Amino acid sequence: MQSRRLILVLDGQGGGMGTQLIKMLAPALPADCDLLAVGTNVLATNAMLKAGASHGATGENAVVYNASRADLILGPIGMILANGILGEVSPKMASAVSGAAAEKILIPSSHCGVQVAGTQDCRLEEYLQSAVALALRALGQ
Image 1 (cartoon, one colour):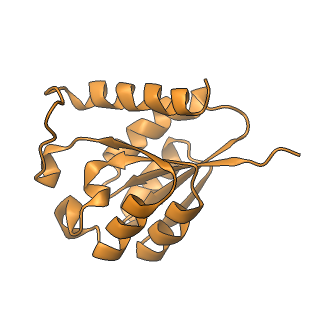
Image 2: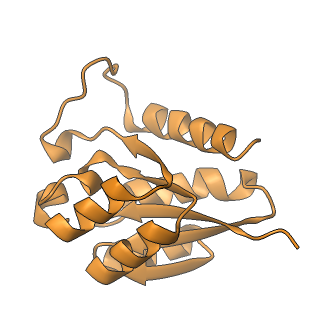
């Protein structure tokens, strides 16, 4: 019996980026994937659940626990930065995500105070389309 793959979408604040990722990714996921939304707060988690995530969890422990179980992690670059996303990402959360064995697909965001050299200045929609394409490639689609 083939095991299920866990696709983890992380977000904070209102979950807008995660919500859009889930709407774009969910219809294209292989049947053996579970889409888990983990928010730094309940607003983000609820928004991602409404967008079509299979399951949801909230808070520091949910990020730490599920990052270690995930096969693929998607979210804003602020999820790997201590005090990222306006302070919503604790150092423990950032360490868990950045140290997870899963492949990580991170979306640049001007709200994180980090600029990544070599990236183009794109609209969020373009970054999200690229992230979904990378995720599907990583899943063999």
